[in-house]
Image 1: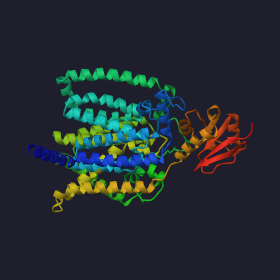
Image 2 (image 1 turned 90 degrees about the horizontal axis):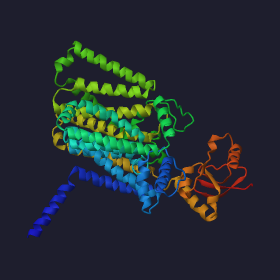
Image 3 (image 1 turned 135 degrees about the vertical axis):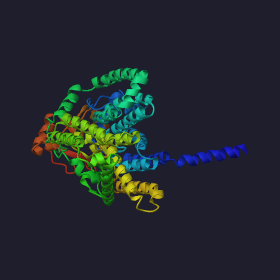
Length: 571
């Protein structure tokens, strides 16, 4: 009897657990990640930088030092190297690590959204985040863009609950900030929304300072230790290249006109925002999947955008008109002064942005958002806490939008840094839109939760179908792998010869030896390029272009898909 009761209790608890939004989210994300991993392992490495991380991981595992790029963020290579040390050396490792970190990020975003919305809306928001084409395509790619965002999400979450619920969580903010920096350097921009949120919650900060001095002392000690750790890792890198890159970005002194990713359009990410919501049609190329700006937005994207814009517009109106209606409507000196200050700061932000002054733009953004909070706050804690979160996400989106807008190199995956904030405003707009409809449509209030989930599931279904329709059988990096394996059998003494490639980091990874970078596009004609190969003693050349040129002194000995192997024929 007791056992039956225990079994009943167990299944009741299990059923209750399975009805929890977070449990549903974890199950959906886990299944999706498993599918994405299966596909990614099959089609291979999607882009250049992943091979750099893999080569660096071999270096950290003391398994070789070929192809090391020692100014890249070290965390993902270090974590990958730990698995390599266990004896499993494969590109699949970095895919799996990316997938696990992605799941962690989705959970963190749900918890962060739940600080502002109810569980159903937070679930819907998290599913919409997963559905963004730029998120789904890069979720398990082995890149560092999403992992950097994941640790930023958790750093912000612990800051929010640390200031509002339990100050002990503040101990976790700095470590996660350092981890995010070591994952992707630009993750440091998350300090902009952090600073804003701290300023917006000065009363809580003062209370913690006054009542819990041990917490502050602990954080200061923690800061010292983390700075030492961070400095240690930075000193292991090529600091001259790192600081040179930082200087070029901050001063915008590097035009990068010759780079394929060069784009001077400051509003690039805003103009392509519809493509980042949802892509259509279902069938298309893998390149469009990785770079949504090259595709076209779907009907779902237009619908979500229209509803969100209407909802956000209504929200802004409600915020400005709630509470002190008379004071807001009356053009008194105080309100006129506030309006002038906001307009001046906004103009300063716009001018500094178009003049590509990164630091000044970020300062203007922070001051503007903080003053907006002070001008709009009504004094009630609940209202103020929601407004603080809204403006925190606004400063998050703005900080990265400014940075990547000014940055002369633009690729769609950079939008990943803005994606959590972008998703936040989609669900905020949808929530406000539904709030406006509830009084007008009978019975809508009781069904609104299902509507949020339906919208999220439509987005997820559309994104999954598009992903399936755009995914190829393999990427050309699989051909490089096959070519590398073949050369080992063809010439067992290949390691004593100079090998060149237009995709050198991939060949370096597969052969575990340094490969000379050789790029035909940098030369006026094939004769000049062939001379370059001869002068550098290149014996085998791996070409990953579909059209393989005739190179004087070389002939093609084998092809694998789009990859051709050239062998030197002249002494």
